[in-house]
Image 1 (cartoon, rainbow, N blue to C red):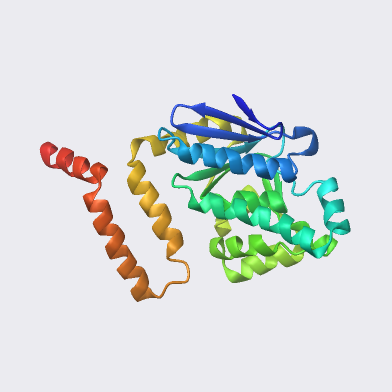
Image 2 (spheres, one colour; image 1 turned 90 degrees about the horizontal axis):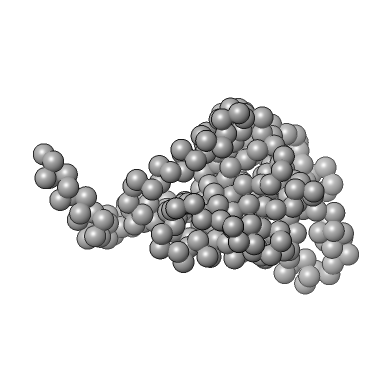
Length: 256
């Protein structure tokens, strides 16, 4: 296991890149070091030809509790320019999570709140312990999870998004799954093994096909139906010409 700063731990398990938020004494609260560490880990995983999937988890009892007290004080004391730079840094992380070609999976134990809930929902897939809790309590201190809203609005219905952001209440993993914020919920006592089994599924499928699928899925945001279909035609052709597809077709025809 390598350290990307002290705030983030970076480990490879075969084709799985495991990234751990490593501030358990602060409930893995977001700060500049943690955000920068996440960016470094994601770029490292993206550049590694052997990596098929990235798993982000939190050390200790919680996934991530949002911004820490020092970061909140920095927001309160900062100028417009300083707050703009700070917000852009988090935006860069969210964009990077969509840009890298492999799936990014959040493995959520305990609480994922405020920016921590945003971090989880920014991942391509969210796996949660049955005891996990999710929420956006920013409204209680007069703050707006503005960047996260762009992601949340694409994950859940408009009315659910409005309810989550304006009431600031926590919801269970089961409810988060019901509304589309979470993909799968596993029993706490089986969580580690269930997550491992789930993410290992990405090692049995085509890396290039998954990369093209991820890019196309997010590229379609905001496209008209016709433009989305035309882009689909272009990606379809690229996929057909890929080495993975050519080999896959050959294997299928040989079996039949």
